[in-house]
Image 1: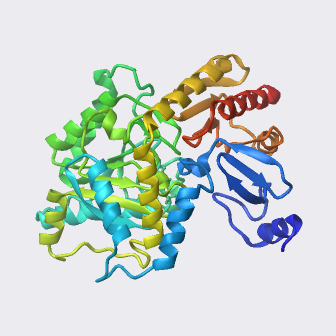
Image 2: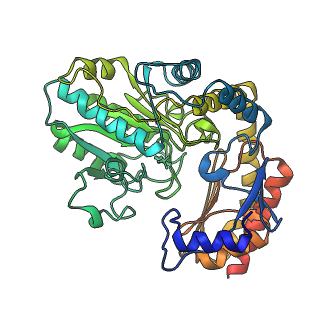
Length: 428
Ligand SMILES: *Cc1c(COP(=O)(O)O)cnc(C)c1O
């Protein structure tokens, strides 16, 4: 067994972490185990997890039912190739996804991560227009402050500044960006809020394959909630100008915002939808790209006659079995009541947060709570403080935020919220 010191030493010498430097490695906390909403560090400290491991762990860690589902599946088979073969876990999963998502989405591509599902969505849109004899429609329209993943296609539709597009400009597809939607779920939409968006459609529709948006909440690009009216306008413009609509529900899917999917807030149905993150409740990597009959039909009648993508681990049975169990667990419980309970808790505990010096804004929607600071937080200061207080949050930029597991008790949520505020007070 490696000691804590050995783990850190090997890691800091050899291991990349998300968005990290190896010259100036950030502090690391080795984890021994995790259970429910608690992460246990190797030094036996316990942290209440406010991150759900990046939106994923909706039912809590080490859940007996999901453990059982994955063990059952391991005993049958862990993997078989998906070319020419299929299996019950995949069939069950695509049926679940078709049943849960808007009814026009009937075809499912199982991908291996969120970013890949976005690549797949973009390729679907481009192949579709190619099949319609309109190959000049290959560009994407996206939103400022958007985040869609880290691979090249996905990166090309992320916010150009946050994503440091200039570093990659020689190889990055040049896409178009509309201003970020004005913040506020309840904020009435004014004409000027969509003026520039409309202008981009008018000017570029002939070369646009699709518009891609994170519905209702822009996640990693700024934790910004916006109006369902805006989404409705996006759908209308896409229809009016013959542009496909891709909703990236990787972060918003499976209840996080209070509805099953972000687009349910606006009652809209996309042409293509991506799912990931909480799809497998934080157990394994898996994602999905769904599309309509129209898109699938177009692709299959086009020049290639097939959709040009096929990951090695496509439809991995273990990941599908986990996703099926997670979805069934979600549907069996009154998940909306859980989300409302967490939303109410966040609102109650953070009502006064705006009065803390340095806090600029507090935003709460569903099981998402965001405290925006005036200035970027110093991670080398705040991260150890949060851990000392017994909570796990991973702020970025000016944002200190939580997306707790849906199963977090009121007591644990109160503790998490109170300790967050204590740490913010101590920064001042
Ligand atoms: C996390 C995320 C992705 C990328 O998913 P990965 O699994 O990290 O590749 C894409 N889109 C959105 C909205 C996300 O939140």
